[in-house]
Every structure is written in structure tokens, then in C-alpha cells.
Length: 73
Image (cartoon, rainbow, N blue to C red; front, side):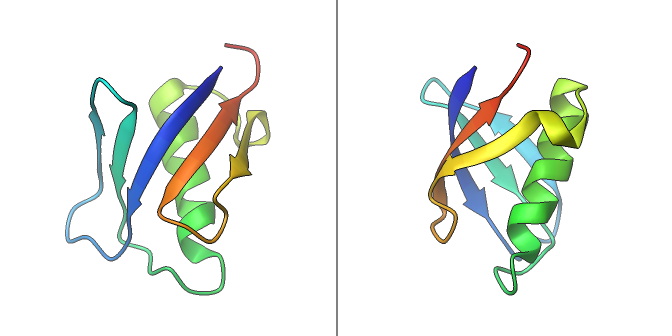
């Protein structure tokens, strides 16, 4: 499954909001040294109840708008 994700790094509260266009993910981690991407993968793994290895960023590694693939769904 491929989903569109908008990442909001540096948020006060971590949460995932489902919209008609994809997900908005609010993260504590800053967008520095790939911290936000790692936190995004952890948050999505918990949200979809899959292993972190099953989640990959297909497009937008350095952008807030990302295409994320979840294998096995």
C-alpha cells in the first residue's frame, strides 16, 4: 500500500491525523540528520501495527510531503 504523508516535525504533541488525501503526522523530532524520517517510520509502524522493516519512504526523503510504502498491507 502506498500512502501520501505530510510530516510536521517539531510538534508539541505526536499524533497522526487521517484525511481524505492521506495522513498528517505530527512528530517531536526535528527535521535534522534524518531524525524526523526515523521517527515517522516508528510512528507509522505503531499506527499500522507492522514492523519498521515493512515501511519505506519512496519519495520525499528531504521534504515534508512524502510517499510511503507499507509492504504486506
